[in-house]
Length: 293
Image (cartoon, rainbow, N blue to C red):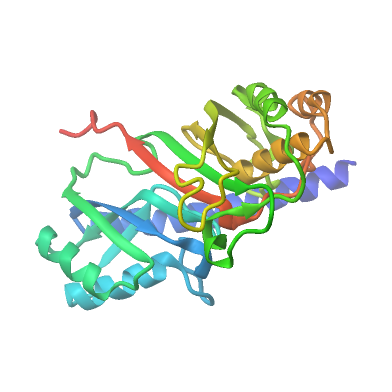
């Protein structure tokens, strides 16, 4: 047991060390690029391996920075997003900060980026921002929405942002389960166990069940629903595991008692496998701009 704790502590230290080095490089880069801008974006995520750029694989950040280099005419900039969505997850109104060594004509930049970005990524708007602004720490609230449908299998063209659930769901029971998840809890059984943190306490501000806003229209089935979840921040896969737990509850695969027990458990194992990524959308990010001078 002691040896196991030693190995875990060593692993945590190495992860913290690597992340600290990466953070330091980003901070130094930001100091050398004093012109800062906040850009709001949308993207359809099912063709991308998430937001964060990777050595191999197509990512939203990688595509965004490629277009920025072309439009700006230089590579002396850094980007940092408020939320790093996973592979397959979409975004309705997210944000990233642009740190540039040179001033930017923002309206021209946005217009040109939307010309050269692929059709599944769009810049909505932007603003110059104070260097006092911190895109991570100044987040007040994030809203994620998970979209799903029941009944007969729907048209494949709707599959990019909609999960098909096989079986009849007990929605009132799912709502009861959602109430259990509200508030501040240790969510270690509702996320992917992360090697870089031992803090699994997060707070869910709101969890609401909604009719899908396009239910019965176009290719979206009439029996389509949305789970809206709001909080300041979430653990890796937390939203998708919570949704999977609620769906399993609605299918009578688990009980309310199991959810309650999981919220007080110290077992490092998710209660359910995460729901598929393609149903999840980062709906909105809200900031506190009060710290700006």
